[in-house]
Length: 295
Image 1 (cartoon, rainbow, N blue to C red):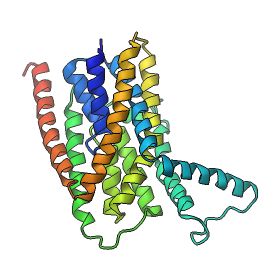
Image 2 (tube, rainbow, N blue to C red; image 1 turned 180 degrees about the horizontal axis):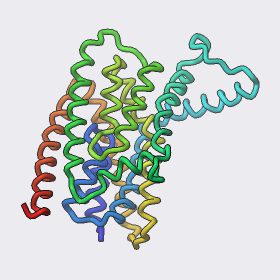
Image 3 (cartoon, rainbow, N blue to C red; image 1 turned 60 degrees about the vertical axis):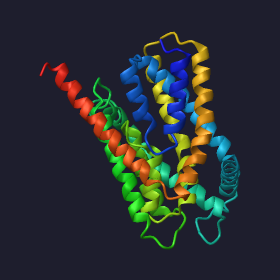
Image 4 (cartoon, rainbow, N blue to C red; image 1 turned 45 degrees about the horizontal axis):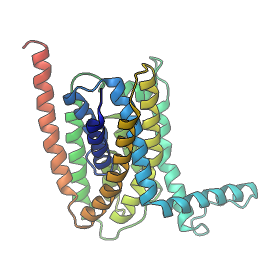
């Protein structure tokens, strides 16, 4: 049974890795693997920890989120009165940002398209990583590290920074979909790096990436909760509360830390970390697989 200490540790892991570009799903998967937490229990805790992540985003970017919400209601009002327009010269900066968020969210719907097996694309892809091996996680950590280093490298060639546009919004959305499928590929890392590769400024990308994560984190938590409820297990309330609160508090601190490190051009060190962790994890995964086969 997951006790309070383990719930606290999982909350810290979620709070740090959800926002720092090192993959929360990958780290939680490693924690569950090495500490022997049951899959159903781990899934339930992971879904609840996502609530803490959402709270952290709302606390840190509440002003921008509020402005976007007000702008959304104004869009509905304009549509009802037939005053709605997509002319970039006639819309506000906030409304333009809202449109970019919508473009980035479109690729998410492809995850729920049905396949021939009767499941959707997300379930099919996730099935490859839902096993006793951590080899997939290791490979994905390496991919995350390479993407982060590529983002840092190509960002230097963009002298004039810009805001998120339609093309970069679509590419960021695709990057987010890929990260949602595999534990070990960082959502924040891939989206921020994609934005940097497209020439978007660092400050804008951090804000854009984390606000964009709201529907993704909510959906991921909901899916994990539904999966965990298929095999109901008694879970103490106190550890859940400890995990959620810890995730929220650490999450707020992590967002602030990432903003500082990105401003100081320290983003590349996350890439080195992910590549190193990925190599170690992949090696352990291969050794465990060979041992299980009796080689």
